[in-house]
Length: 111
Length: 115
Image (cartoon, rainbow over the protein chains, first blue to last red):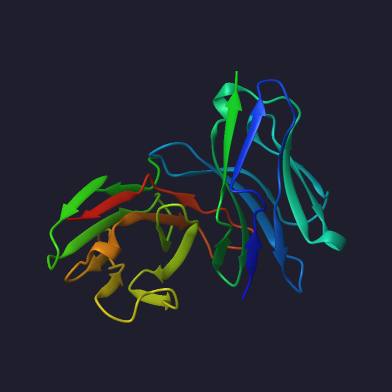
């Protein structure tokens, strides 16, 4: 079975600073990788996904992630944090018709 | 095209009662997934269904929990004789095809509180 590890359950950044949320996965085959965002009392919204092709994936709201096979990582970044980015972020791997989610990283943006 | 609709959004049940959670997938989607989110934890897969079939229920507790996705109507997650530990947010997702490259769309969840 897959496992997804998100380092840092809570991350705080200043408004305008770089956002870096880490995700590592375990897989012996090329996976499908996703980042979802969850705002308070809401469902999950897809930020971006990697399936095949270019390893740098751009998503909504200025976020992007890079698939690094050698490091089994799919870290999420945004050059400049905005107050509206405060939310819970989940990394997920899809395999055999299941999503395997990490435990999430709560992002706080400090004015 | 409405998104994935879950109802109720909030559900309160006393210990021992039954909880029924409903999920209407997006139009054209025939694959439904249920996940549970416990406080301070990530989402845990429970069950994957297609119309009238349970494809994978490896994440379902062995007792008290059941799920169905009938030919007509929403998917139902049923929890019998609820206990305090069942208190959680339950999310439904749907997709056009099996997950993989296909994106799954999530509903807003049902927050179950057992008192």
